[in-house]
Image (cartoon, rainbow, N blue to C red; front, side):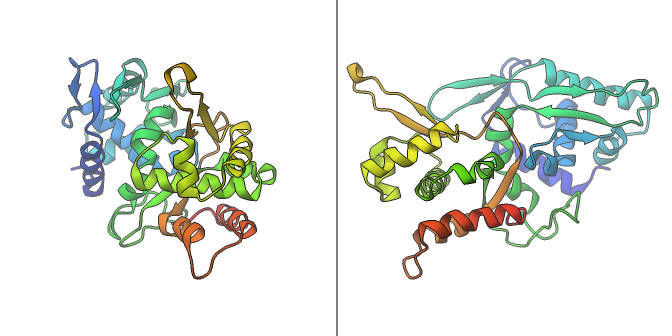
Length: 298
């Protein structure tokens, strides 16, 4: 019999992400009864904290077998191995709300142990960046800390809280550049990432950012250039002939992926918009860095 917390995780994960399509199965929506997808979800469930830190998922086959309630047999272990290579070799399709589609392999790297004839050694798999961004990271803390009964793989490093608030995941690469970021650039970055989370909108034009970030056009260009140069924000240039304006997008898949730090949405909102006790630019830069040093807000 499989773990009840895993079952809850499984159905919520795939119900949330109903826009995923298995291209190898006649372009149909994910079949939640398919063993390959149950094995994939068990690997994700086993390694969700490793994913949050930007690491590969390390596991052994016994952990996956026990989580799924499968029999202890060579046949079962071969099924797990085949599922891993299935997601390395076959594409999934993600349908975006703005009418375009991305194709990707969920698993992009596999570290298979040598001479593991009894399936006792640890495997490692790397999860594709698109899958992490679109499928996992947006919901990781909702899925793992929805209530105080939900299973935590590593209780020492990850605490579940009842009535956990929504989290925004900030790439740790942002904090590695903290000394190179101006006070205004830090505030602008958090303003955009908060607005993106509140509206589920990813692309922003300059006039929109100026309005919700409450900055002048001159300050915007100064702060934004700082962020673009460090590859924290991507700029997609417009086209004057078609009157298409430039748009700015938070870079959620930095080249050097060192994991993510969770922030409560109300913390960022308070940091930026508290009228009674308004924070200075210096404090807006300092406070997130202290949260990062503490390992985030769980």
